[in-house]
Image 1 (cartoon, rainbow, N blue to C red):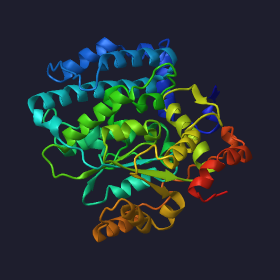
Image 2 (cartoon, rainbow, N blue to C red):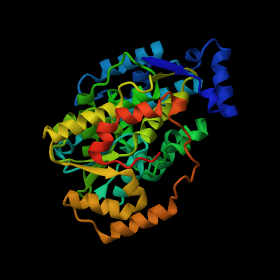
Image 3 (cartoon, rainbow, N blue to C red):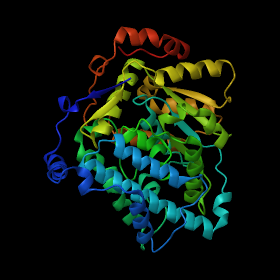
Length: 409
């Protein structure tokens, strides 16, 4: 079941956003001002790259996914003018990235032979420490997190330097907070920070980004295609550089964990845990805020329905039964917040990975320069997002008991 939530009870749109959205209303609808047409976008991307026409087939039928995505965005997305502008830019950037990526791989076949070795993959529900852990592991001198600017613009174009590509990427990274300032209290997007895999795989037109930013219930993600694109992009970013283990992150890996290990058999999966009374309503709040950036009508899953909590209980059973590789370690939010260095050192010990003193020093410096709540607090409660706290606590007992999770309220 789904419900529509009026987020004007929570947030006020900045005046400039309200006025731009009204421009769409003034011409009979935002689709007249910012059209989304598959063939026109494809032609525009081709022209903007000097006539490149090969979008690649390394991840299957991208065009079918692209066309069906736009059809569903138009049918159920209810995008306002700013939302259509953000989405159109992402679609075009994704097409251009595919063209440039395919051209590079065709010019240099060695790219497709790059080995992706033992990536450190973080997954868990939102607000369980995934983002800060992602940033701390990316400080490892022997590891590498994919940075925002290099994911959005992984290949040179028009003579742009890396610094220019970094500055250009701000239109996507920092812009989210411009559209809705409260978003900064939930998640910090910055061009020089590592970015999670839903952004990395956006140009595959197959993964989690699109279902996150808009209500498109009839469009099905193709996670096999997502991981094929994922590998192709990592190989391209890695080619010609010093070999390092990638640090990767997205809650969506909980959904297709088997496919993750099929793609990267020697991956280490770091599963983050926190009190479900914090993570479950926050997950719904985060999804609502992201969709509110682009639409005035926010449809959400019914609170308390099947969600990440159910998936985590199922995964606990699978791990106990030995159905998953013995390459999964656990990170508890309360331990990470209490002593980040000790928590990371513990994880590295479980993965039999050296924990360097320079890494520990970098973590201490990073935490000191990024105090918790620097952009304000993400305020939410279970009840205001439709949860019954007692029922949720009871439902999640198999999960909290199994992992010994500290209850925060």
